[in-house]
Image 1 (tube, rainbow, N blue to C red):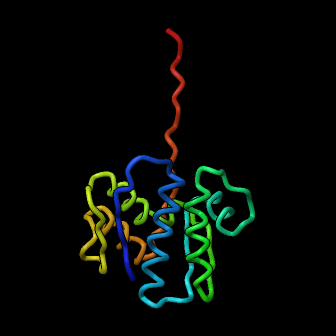
Image 2 (cartoon, rainbow, N blue to C red):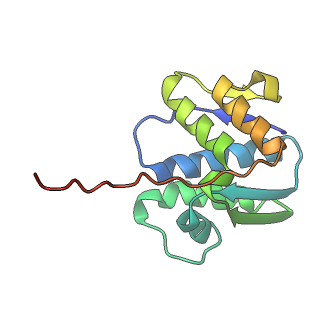
Image 3 (cartoon, rainbow, N blue to C red):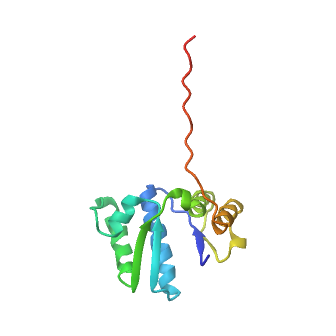
Length: 142
């Protein structure tokens, strides 16, 4: 783990939150001198927009333009889709951001919120996570 963060973003869509999180992470990486970056995102659509494989909506044009400016400063950049099940720690931090009022940055696993720490430990042990669906039960008519 290099860095983890949770920041309250206020109102907006999940895509806007993903773009802002990517901007924060890339900005920090560049400030720390990292020039070879792999960005993993659990939204296939956002990956397509970042890699210019699909047209994005006008509502996030400004955010994506700022993100593209950061990407332009990176020597070697790769953006990959990762399933949410393989990204549980990040998903946990996203949920945690709704409970806080100011940005929180974590530099080691001991600083992470309790639930996120548990997901991080499972990741480090390479424990597989599975997508679970609730089974719909059809009731018999009386």
